[in-house]
Amino acid sequence: MNILICGLGLIGASLAKTLKKNTNHTVLGWNRTKSVTEKALRDGVIDRTGEVDDLMREADITFINFYPDAIVPFILEHKDSFKRDSIVSDSCGIKTKICREMEKHKLNFYFIGAHPMAGREVSGYDNSLDNLYDNASFICTPFEDTPRNKTDALVGLAQQMGFARTVVTNPEHHDEMIAFTSQIAHVLACSYVLSPLAPMHAGYSAGSYRDVSRVARINAEMWTQLFLDNKEALVREIDDLVSNLMKFKYNIVNGDTDALKALMEEGNRIKEEIG
Image: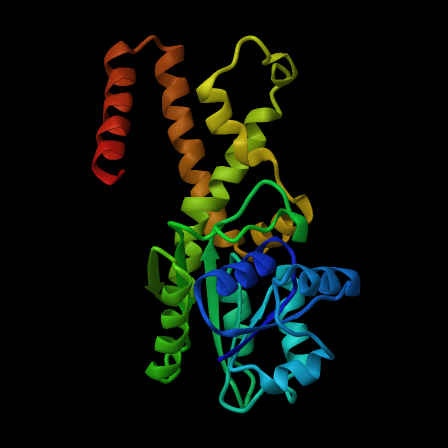
């Protein structure tokens, strides 16, 4: 197959490198900044490049790897260029806003939202890896009327690439779960390092500080879009987190040893059960 990667930043270039490493598919590549495309071609990360509309006409599967708010406009701008009956996907960390907008349009290709669940605290082509998706999950969010063979083709490609697990779900459930497994962790990490004591952590910090603060290294522009595009689910998670923090605060302020111990035992029990 011809696989087109549009957007050769961290996620897109890592997809291209993974395809080259683990499959025999032809990898086409395009990036808005031409120098990045040229570097990917020199590095052997992509097999061919060219005008984006010409590449779209050849591609059996296209991945769009842009910031959230740029994905739908880009696809609609080029909607007549995609190969008929091909699969067009994305790699964005939220799905409902994108998928439900794409669902409104009559297209001659099949849009299937996707989310390769991996990332780093750095961005850009130079930080891409051919093993970024090792042990990662690949989530697909097809429309209800998407032909099963099209979803199977995208899932099958993810399996060829070496993703450890593939999940097929609807956009709303994806976003609900991502609010819990990813977005709230970034909110927590950023809130944590906003403490006035954070600049003085050296000499006092070890594993706990590193674990909690790690994802405070964040692309603020991209994550602002992700948070706002998933605000309802994320706000529910923030409310739950604040509620639990207040339980700890209340029991510490009141010196309630039994209640405090019970909270921690419950947290430990849940973590032991779910991993």
